Length: 624
Figure 1 (cartoon, one colour):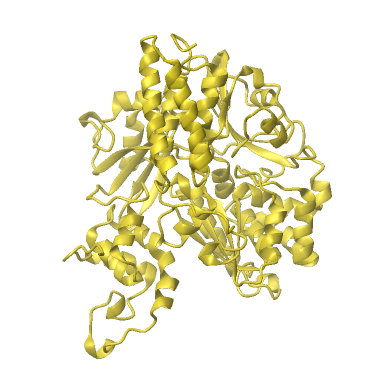
Figure 2: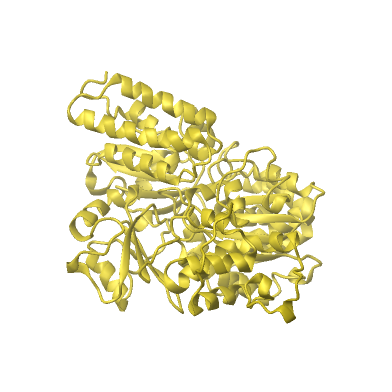
């Protein structure tokens, strides 16, 4: 049985928005008006048509919502006819992502972050004092001329400027802006009324112990100018890569021992080698720019302020691994990043740096952007592939691995933004020279996202081996001279450490030895005023909300984890937290680690268990 919305047809605006993306319907079989003379009684294409167009489902859904602010049943039906997608499957996709609206919605959507870093900077009091309940209109005192809907939002990737909000406007010319360092809801209202949004400066920190590599162009080059990028050394690495040849480039990456910077720390060179030797064609390359880990914002800054470097790095990676087409999957909450990268792609293509003959070599490579729609799970590489293919963003079982069976069932290279940025310097310097920075097992520099109760939140680049305490001092230490209570490393999927960890060198090997992780580079500081119980509950709720629901251990376990924490919180307030509940929390975490399909379920309890064991949260008042 399939799902059909009988009688629902798109408005002229919705039809025009979808047609602007997909082009006019070719026939009545694909969304046009039926004409027996023109169409006859035969449709051509069959399975090939379905296979070729399903990946445009997310862009089409975005096009419809961008026009009127939500996805109506009529718009969904029209998209399904255009793409030959069963309505039941499309409904499963549209309801999977939290940025899509399926009920009538105001043309302005205000997403106010209530995640960890923003809570530490007063977001919850902002809600309590100025905003109406979640998902409703603002209180009368803050009402403005244009209709708007307010939403609580998970992390927006603006932790260095918390609290933050994203304002999305639908219409013939859709737009999105951010408001940061919010003191009151009136600032959001002012932005909606067209008086402008709060200016946002990019974070950039000097490195006293070594040269800046990844951030050296941030705040220096004009991100909209190819000429500016080339003036600062742009595209010298690609020319060098052509001289080295594909095998030579891969060998330099292997020699450099570049480990992935997305969290898993897999050797990049091994991944590239595996794809390059696969006989199946075509090969694809995917840049995972869907950083949704609470506390992470490094990729946003690189994308917004140095987009040509990403294009060059992906071109080098594609040349080395035999890819002729690539995708950049950018999270939906990064409108400026998407705009800057698209401009860079268009400019590079016009300059002969993308297309049929890259830099006049017999090398073809081109790129396109895919826009996420709000799903943390799509940071997992196989869930990202499903999302790109127009499916629900649910992880796939492995093996087979992406190097053999990835996007569209073909060999696929997938790297995150920071990992790719390192490729430029590896090619220019040589892998051996590049690896002299850092430690033997953790080579190069690392980007760290400092937020929370720190004097100077921002993005810091440092060589592997800097201690946690040294990094914290570089950011000015704990804000307002308060005492340090805890640091969250790696984000919601990471773990907490106490003040005793300040001497720990920040390397992959030292983090493992200490039973923690560097993850995606999150370093979130909590002073002695922070309510860690509230933080743990927010992490648990985040994991519960972001679980894709595919496997029982994660789908049910994250719910039970939240319930257990609420019970422990209430018991602690009464001085009656129980040993049994704490043991159950540990057993639940072990079950999720052992039986979940992907990393979300496997790490859903990591930060929570670390806080209980290392920081003794909930252990006061009867839980010996």
